[in-house]
Length: 339
Image 1 (cartoon, one colour):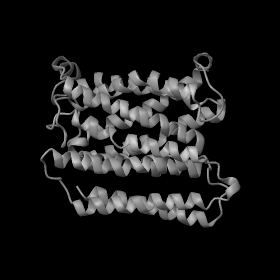
Image 2 (cartoon, helix red, strand yellow):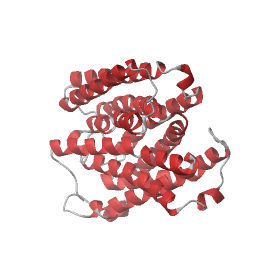
Image 3 (spheres, helix red, strand yellow):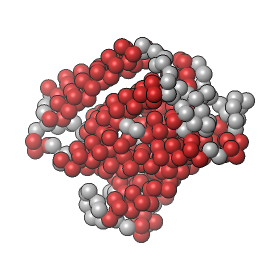
Image 4 (cartoon, one colour):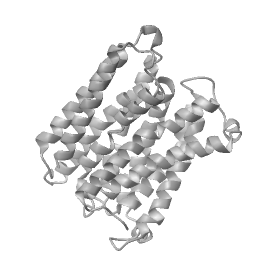
């Protein structure tokens, strides 16, 4: 298999992952804007894209090169204890992402991501840090810089909330339901990365306690998503948070372009996951997760500057948004230097 062992390249992998995880929701916005396609219908295509990308990565990058076992060799060993952690990571992520996708549908990228993604970001850093400590290993970096970076990011998320709160009341299109959905999403998503890490061989990543290679872990993670989407999404279809109930008949009536865009969204997100785990061993999971999950700031760029979700906001909000971006960048720099 092919892995990244150079720290600088590993950090670049995390940056690519960050861009992917902050950009996939554009595909949801595209189909919702152009075709009035509900998030529940979009989610079926997203899942297909996620699974196909994980499978392709396992059969190519995970089966090439001279490092470690190939994907098929790893499956032959079949360590159920390790597989269940990766699978559970997929279940947990899918549960949270259903809520995040619903929050984006109701509240937009500029609100859903900072609340849901931001909460998942901070909680995930702590969770992955504890995995390393509980595995009996020393954190391989400067803890002061890591936690200082976390504090700066928390301040940035708080400023984002302040900016939204300053929107005129009649322009605020985010009901309490959207905020609640984002919070539930963040609480669930914060645990998925650490669960997948636990499934991996500690030879490949600090904090791992399993036997899987990164590509096999990602594949089992994708299987967890594939198996649970019919359960979670069917419930969402019967209990819509916005609009009327939707049916599978409507899904199959969708255009090829609409389905392709949804699948592309899955390719973008899972592509980021693959790249992140390629360099997780060189960057350590706490750093890798922290940098990869800087997605809220990327999503804010899309939401503010492309989708114009704050276009009718007072001019004073621009200063808050600028401060938020600067603090996010400062936090990322501190976290990067902490390794």
